[in-house]
Image 1 (cartoon, rainbow, N blue to C red):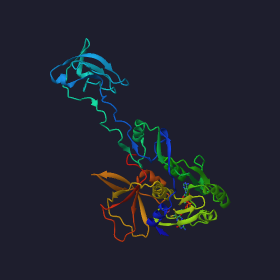
Image 2: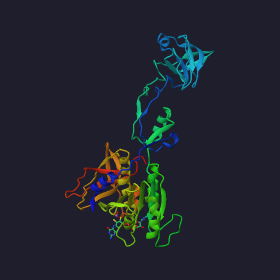
Image 3: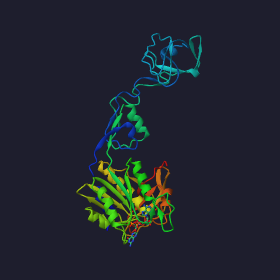
Image 4: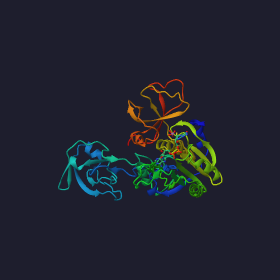
Length: 400
Ligand SMILES: Nc1nc2c(c(=O)[nH]1)N[C@H]1C(S)=C(S)[C@@H](COP(=O)(O)OP(=O)(O)OC[C@H]3O[C@@H](n4cnc5c(N)ncnc54)[C@H](O)[C@@H]3O)O[C@H]1N2
Ligand code: MOO
């Protein structure tokens, strides 16, 4: 059995060359940006009125003028106009180009308009209610960098600089299998000895967050059937993720079958809890990696988040963000296993503080929905003290 640190390094040392791809903007949400994105023009691209009202030359107001005859109108979406006479004004709508010759916008609420003349009835500051050209970014400035996740805000940035197509990191072809004769489909009425398949939904949804849409299947505890189904999946470059069937049981066929199917074992069993019987290997002929997770729901879930995501980021030449949390009370791990403790994280005076969520064995998948992630306690003879900082692996965002 190898240590968690060794297992982690071995997983990272087997990357796939995934490369990048150009995809349409509408498909970019949730993907990871691979190229740099620059502004193609000043942002905003012109002096933009931020209120509906009138545009005027501030110098005239400063000299005491309060009544401004209205000479025309600037609407959003119309070309630049010119305020030729600084003793006059022009009506201007939010989003319009502020006319040349004007440098200040006064809101309708601060005016009275009578017979084509705007009377100003409130104090005015030079440049008010204008979003100046280039004040957010100049043309040619770097706006987004490789490795940034494309969320709703980044979608807006890409759109505003004309990226109808963006370069993102490519995703691996992925297959996902559950195993075990006790498992029945979700819509079945389980008999007393049966349970519904849940791991596959957890993993499918976790992969979905990365926009990976795996081929999904279920393997019965039947060697020929497993072999037949897995042979096709293993014969292509990509990844195969499995849940269950890798421990010591008489019907845990997977490790033996992987060998028969030409998958080389990189390691089996890691000194960690939960998630110990994790099996990892590679089919060197096809370039297919196998992450075979122990079936207990918490073990499958933890190992996916610990190993698979870090592996994927590493394939892209990136490193997943690391987090640390403070332990609220003394903890011990004098076992020889790296222990992952399920818990919530809350912010206290700018620090992230861990709070354990009780877990009733690694079969207790209900506890997962009550927590944010796992704190990592390495084996140690001395206790972990209250206030000590330890690594934390999020699977849930602080916002959700
Ligand atoms: N003699 C030993 N027995 C076991 C050991 C050991 O070291 N020696 N390790 C234990 C640990 S730790 C784990 S974890 C499990 C892992 O076993 P398997 O990977 O073979 O998983 P299964 O036996 O197939 O399933 C375990 C458990 O999880 C449930 N399960 C499996 N798949 C799903 C699914 N898709 N949805 C919901 N639940 C699932 C399954 O019904 C079992 O209850 O081995 C221990 N045994
Ligand atoms: O290590 Mo197993 O993964 O606890 O149930």
